[in-house]
Length: 88
Image (cartoon, rainbow, N blue to C red; front, side, top):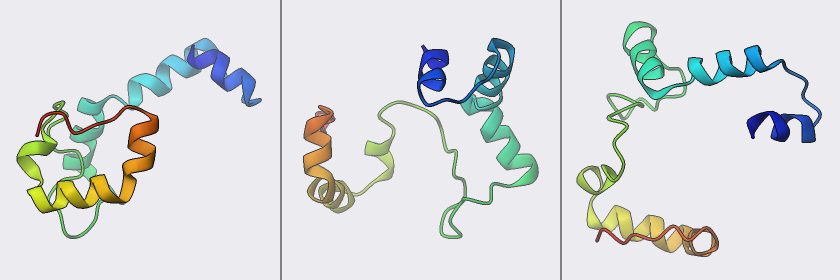
């Protein structure tokens, strides 16, 4: 569980604090917050950091060259975690 992971690294939080943190970082809340107050980590080159939150939507957003570049640069880690571009 998330509590066990935090305990393992020595971070002490109550179950209530953990649930509040998880709730505060839900995609829909972060997306709404970005619209209302901005998101400082967003690059100036993009309209929104939190786009759709839809699994597999990257295939509609990235060009085939971008996909190949990502795969080439991160092939080793992607293979370790069995994260393959099976949709292509």
